[in-house]
Length: 270
Ligand code: 13P
Image (cartoon, rainbow, N blue to C red; front, side, top):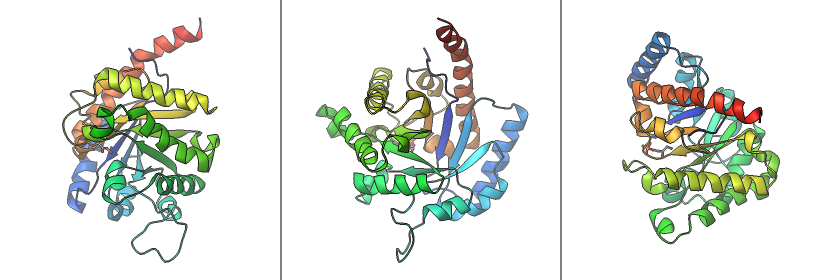
């Protein structure tokens, strides 16, 4: 059952992986796959490490947008090692991840830092991808909805409802990242449902926000995940490092979207 009538969005997060040679191979394989069998009705993007943005923007197939994995919470100035939203825009990035759990945990990024990054990205004309998700302990303590709501709320307080317009939220349960464990279908639907409920309560139109799932998505399980209620695409880590798997995942999103179209049409005509 897939009820989303949005064009699915599939983003690859390469994290700290790759090399110039790997990237070239990835692009060659992705291009070959797309030429062999085009994938329509899916929006695609990859977020490579910062040093590769410049070269990848010149060689990525036109269908694959560029994204970054992080952005500074400051505008400009003496912030050694930081990259501003304006710089990412200049490199023609379309997306930027904000608040990935690996940064929240390892670099102690707070909800406030993430909200500032989100706002600056938005002002620069980028699409921030707000990553939210609970730890295993928080899940065990039944705090999942509370944690996610707090993470959303911090951005809402700084950016208001319009901040989420044409926005992207990625639900990534921390315990499912890189572990091979995906959340169960009912867990995913419950959390995505809670996110849409939160959006509704804050007068943010459901149709204007993509809610992605991330956490051990691979070609073998992606079709089942994308078919779930409220899943508008995926944020793919490990499996996106292989161009073939990434395109296979995109293909499964395209197939689920095509199955959903008659449903969406039937609902509209009711
Ligand atoms: P994996 O797909 O490797 O679990 O990573 C998910 C993720 O963190 C994407 O941002």
